[in-house]
Image (cartoon, rainbow, N blue to C red):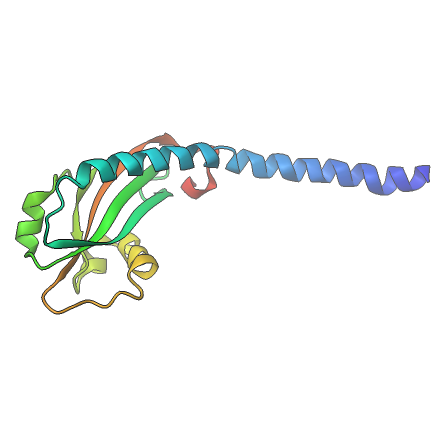
Length: 157
């Protein structure tokens, strides 16, 4: 019995502990970032809902944590996918714009060419079953926050 204990149980406990520590190193911050993201999304929705035109319809709310930039920060993205019969120019005038932190992106024919793979991912995730009606513009009004370190959240590596 002592031999069984020394050969099987002790190494199993040591290996399991190492695996748990390794996984914890890359994931310990995920619950904290999820709470931050939830608060960020709530604040975004509260402020942007005041600006949304009556001629627009909410399709989906978006909240994502990822690393879309250079790999040194964890980026939070909150947004609303909306549909409107207003023109692109009218919609752009309604919402605040800052190249790095806020804006409006349209899901037109050239959206992937203009905005990159993130927008393709969002299209697949949120608009896959949405049928576009003639004369409507599908757009994402968004805001991002890029001030958290990547350590401890594997989504940001």
